[in-house]
View 1 (cartoon, rainbow, N blue to C red):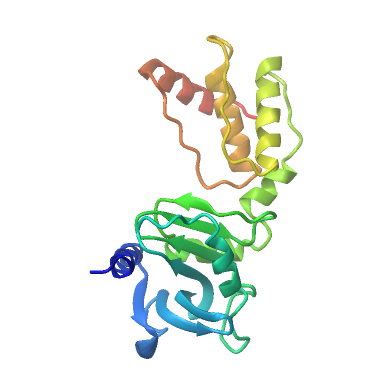
View 2: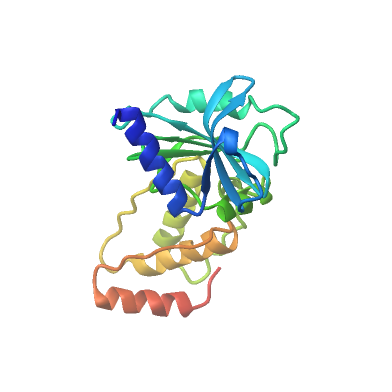
Length: 231
């Protein structure tokens, strides 16, 4: 099997695992399920390796590359496909809001509804229902909400805790998705993390926040902090 064929095989498998029905263009049946991934779909700008449909409407594309291919810069190829859909094809919006680049080993995702769209690595493809949820949010996306967080009530927090949360929110608002917080022992790291997680879910409308405590006692502290009043 050639590298390109191996990549397509693995992409097909991952799509199927995520509840997409993979079809050839010649056998396209948009009534077969909620999410349909159509291979080799002809667009005005060329052939999309996969065109994604949800509820019979086009929603995104996948650009496939052989394993080992560096995906940096491939999003520019995907970009020409999201703009290449004919107006006669039913769609959620144009340009198509979502684009993937994948080798079957590494997959990148771009949400074109974000204020500053950028590709990021994901574990696998989103399920059809999640793309539907994202597109129905319109401009009310997580990264847009991070730029418009509610005023921060610092009552009950130490100065260092308030500064950490404010700087973290500013970093995320500046489209920097990764941050490292370093605080001294006893400075309230757990309560700081819980306070920020609360604000992230309540005001930025994040779906979930995951905490990995390093010790059992830290986990117990986190549970108590999460049950306390939040700002």
